[in-house]
Image (cartoon, rainbow, N blue to C red; front, side, top):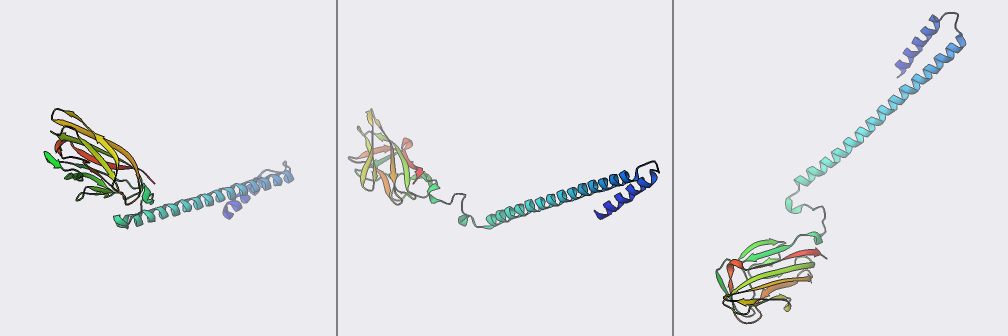
Length: 220
């Protein structure tokens, strides 16, 4: 910057000397000083702008480097130890659904329905060996069942929570088949259990069209 100012002074003095005696030297010197001041302000302004841009660039680079370090740390963390964006356990997704592959299955009175094909078990709340679902998260759950009975006449199905009947599905007799649908909404605390059963009598279930399941709608 100092070199620029010196060059400007030399150039303007040369102009004054070359202007001749016909010019007002006093006004010319004032003009020279004004130009020097203007050039100095312009140079300083550009220098400050350049410095500010440099600082802004350094800040942006620092932020990008910090984000890059976080991403590298996240990638290097084992999958099972990663913390999701919302670490609150209440936001976990829970669901299960099971089907019956047997053509005909006989279910006795009060026997827990245990279908043999688990097609979904997010949250691992459903226990295939017992047919019981244990809520891994407190919240509002929706349960459903579609049970097709064969040669049963009247068919019903019950949803049990902690030993108490909370929902019933009733079917109508149509020749050889009777369908008992069930849909029920209930609040559950973590660790509470539900299951489906036949509340009375023996039932023959047709496997191709029978299934049941549940899903967490809203965590507490």
